Image (cartoon, rainbow, N blue to C red):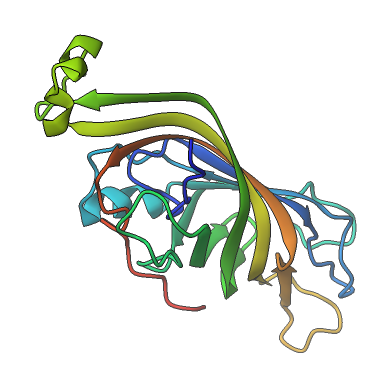
Length: 237
């Protein structure tokens, strides 16, 4: 099967997907960084029929999971697991062939935001996250046809030429791998930090040039615009 473009973070028909970014370091109070670990972003599913604006909006805002690397000594007090993060991206991504299921392999201008209300810590992209997908490994591939009512056609129907008036469906699991070409998350906290004029903490989690793995299940219906239903980006923090 052709290597499909990821298109967007939450493409129509993409099941629950998970992005693991390796080598993420949390900022310490003394301005150094902790030992790097994994940051995980869990994205909710978007059904194949959710091509309208609301389908993406409702799934993208307040329903994204984020797990930070294990907390270490020298950091501000914070939790590491969040279930209510919000994410948006460039409505066109960075895919110049957004009218096709196959094309360029980048997703751009991702804005991520979440909060630790217990410890009064706020996280939001200071520099937008851009993903460069370098490779994709599909598995459990299945290709079939649906008629106008969504019923799956049998081999005999296809042999009789009925597939000419149907929808072709690609159903597969895939693991994308690549590099985060840019991305910096601002960390602000109200915890009193010695030596800080404001009394609070201000640091960054830098994701630039880190490798990632992105696994998901996808159901692609062709032809269909992969640009449908995108949400406008969050304003910079």
